[in-house]
View 1 (cartoon, rainbow, N blue to C red):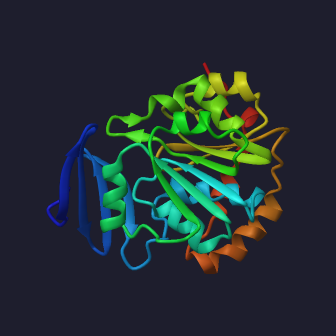
View 2: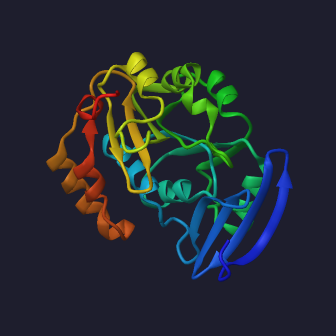
Length: 257
């Protein structure tokens, strides 16, 4: 927290400290002392400030009117707000391990109140086991104070995510990049499970977003995607063009050494 940030609330749960601060028209949710987990623009809680969350929206190109969306890791709720505010999901379920995070998102971060939104506290893995073939679009963004959740490095978790997709569905995974390799932490595991028929994009923050279909090779239709991004720009207030331009199939990434 900088000197300019105003502390709004601090509390501790079973997983550590949580803090909400405010500065320059934004509110920030911190895990621990230094990990800025979420950012909410007070004037428009559906606004996405981080590059990685904007890049995750590329999944909506292949699922432009998803019936059921599953979000693993609510955080401050900006991604969920954006989906509800700018797209047309029939139903969104958000799973969050920490009930205190849900409370802070509702109290301070502008989490939407919407009949289409269901928020369930609990373990993402347990929810997936109980919900096969339950969604058209799945976003997984599981992080703790120390970094990426161990679940997002495990075969069984990815298997459960894939099993939760309906035919034609898509999962979007927020991973960390290994240094400047252009590869996610779980690259070898993902290649073993899904081949290289998925798409990925690296953003400046160091995250790498993966787009993995329920089956087959995900088409990279760049010109059509750019037109789709242009049509969204006036609604979102920012462009998705840079992420479309950087999108590539996994087999086009630098090889692991």
